Image (cartoon, rainbow, N blue to C red):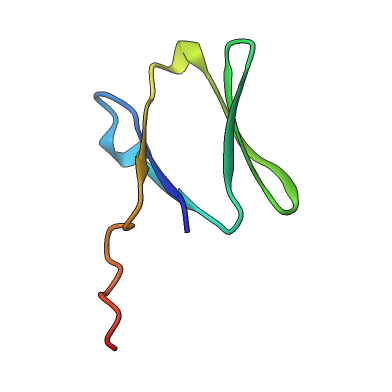
Length: 66
């Protein structure tokens, strides 16, 4: 399941771990737009200065036992 860590430099309390299945990230104009099965769930303007990082193994997920 894709996940994205969104960090706001200097504002750690505003950091977000966004995940969903399906979750997509597209860029429209000066906006980063996240969408899931229900439509757009978050849009961030470029002026916000956020750093977006894809995280394939979200923080806090436990390894699966076989």
